[in-house]
Length: 587
Image: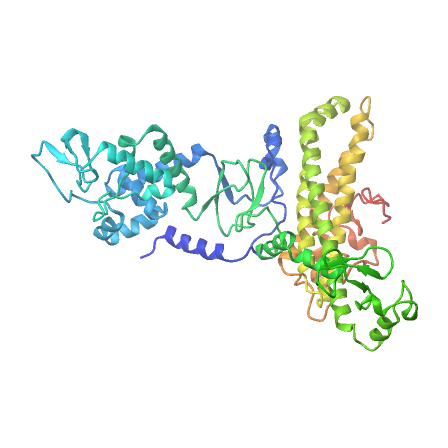
């Protein structure tokens, strides 16, 4: 009979084998106020800040938390099975710290488990009356009080035990599964023997291995992959997004441990990272921008000058750049130094078609990759700059703005939320370029719909970023309270909400594989309004980049509270307003 925890373990293993999938996620905003160290001062507002975001499905563990959980599990097993804590820790370590697995196996066949793990009920050898015993390693005789043994009873002196345990600990975490030195014996050597016989340095190493095994051997926990970070993550698989934000400020994907990359799946991220670091792009550049010497075959780049090329020593072969023929066969009669009649004639006859086509394909491929990579890298740089600006805002500017505008800091949390949104949106936008690179060229309708959603989201982000960066500076530089600061508050909060809607729609569409585009290449009416309005805009649809359907009557945009939704940015404006307060577009 399988226990509930064991069945959960099996489900976890299946889930982790699959590539990242966002099908269970409803929102795209994973960023929490606790994601960044420098926002800790604002923890009082974290509940308000994240009220619109989906529930966190993981727990960040400190070393103290890990140790406490480990001790609790050992105590539980020791109590239920009526065994020592040392034996309980050996059992848990053998079954990868799964309490349910230990229970199931132990009660199914205790004798089998004891034999597999090395927990003996009684000694294999006994010397009840001996005053001296012979060490099984050095074969010297020692008084009984200088001889130690595991549960099996095989005698070894303190010096040999110390050397045996020290060597095992130096070799690494395998020391946690240490057995009796006797080659015929499988008795387990527990932490009590280590504490009794090993040096202080080796005890400390063993203790660290033992603590780390609780995370590394457990399928539900992982270390944060950020360099120098000692936090661990306990993750609930199936609870939503795989994105995790550690307290050290690093965000990563639980499934592949790369940096957080929602809405792009782990397979695409792996291909993109490999492509960015692989030599394939170097070969593409060489193929697109050089030609091989006809004699020695070394690639040559021509960036200026005439068609007369001389290869570098020791080759020194002279040839025509266009037709790759020997220069001795060229001259005035073949078109001079800047043309080649032979090449033109041969090209018309189709001699160079295949080589030229291959070179053009390589050049086009390189240009396409460069297009997406530059934008991917630019958004990464923008995100790093936004993180630095957010830190500056929290440590310096909020207090300054509070003094200048006579506003309590608790009333300025809309600025923090705006910058958090910018940081998260930059991350999402960065990975959409990797998604776009691998989107099949022949799926024109999906590509158009993707580019439209991406363009709308990017333009919304740029408006928000400019407002938070440039317009906010005006109020920071002011000598006193500004009359229009409340208008700025409304505008920034509105842009934050609008941008969030755009990116939620973009993430949702990409995670669903752009399924809103049907097989005929058109976007369904229901999907269009859902994808572009964020629930507040009911008159927008997307059939491609730059196209949208408009409502013929402005009254259709009124909601129950009498607000009308802007068709350009989806902001809910007051009924009396004729111009959108956010994007300045007419109603």
